Image (cartoon, rainbow, N blue to C red):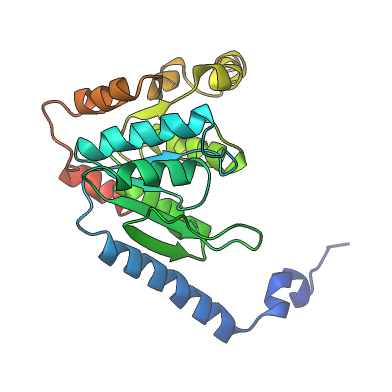
Length: 241
């Protein structure tokens, strides 16, 4: 006997709890976030996106290192972009704020998180994670990633995926805290490369650099001879993330 499906079974259950009007307003809200962020950050180039745990307090070695890295990047002419929150996000904004270039915070509205830190020269609030994450990638000439939790890992794996698949331009992806990251990178090599899930050369997308001055130098070296402005082909990629 042939199996048949009733129409209600083919409807997304979520559609039963919302209206077309609500969905339309949500889409408009997403568009508004993209438009506002794009307009306010139009002149931000070059920039470095920095990530790390929201739970690290001032005085922790990671906090101090993040602040130093951001200060050096800012004085070298890079706007520094963080998630705008506490912990290492605050350290990044604080270091940049004390330097020569803007400290930018892309804040996310979460139910149990503190508000944005006080060291943001430019502060933009997002409701939607993916709109915020796109701006991190779209503006960044490099990623500098300090130790952190799920959110930090999410940003790391996202940029690796975008670069590996050619959806984004290749940029320096720099990890700080080699001892912290060692287990994860060993697992990448053992399991992902070892079982053929990524190529061995994909590991070359990641650098571990500890010294703040060496991080700045590595970013400049990467762009030596080509400049920080995206090429026309790279701009096309960024429009189709």
